[in-house]
Length: 80
Image (tube, rainbow, N blue to C red):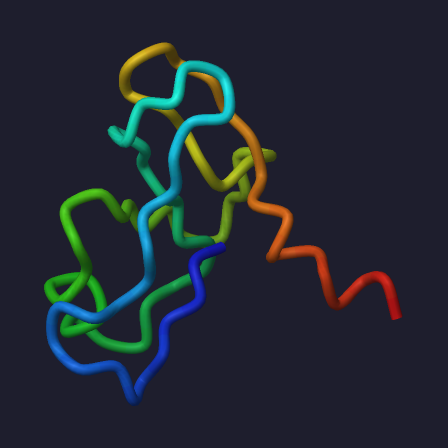
């Protein structure tokens, strides 16, 4: 899941990941859940894809090699 920062200035949203398999920067971030408004979707970078409530089992996908993975930052709260 991509974490949006409501206080972020335009052009300073979430950072795009790099593929851990091939080091490509052509990575799609899946945003899990329903957007609160159409502005959420329209204001997203082209590399973010809203997928609704059906979790595909990962939240990152490389367009170059097809690798899929979940961002470790999404699970850091589970260590508590």
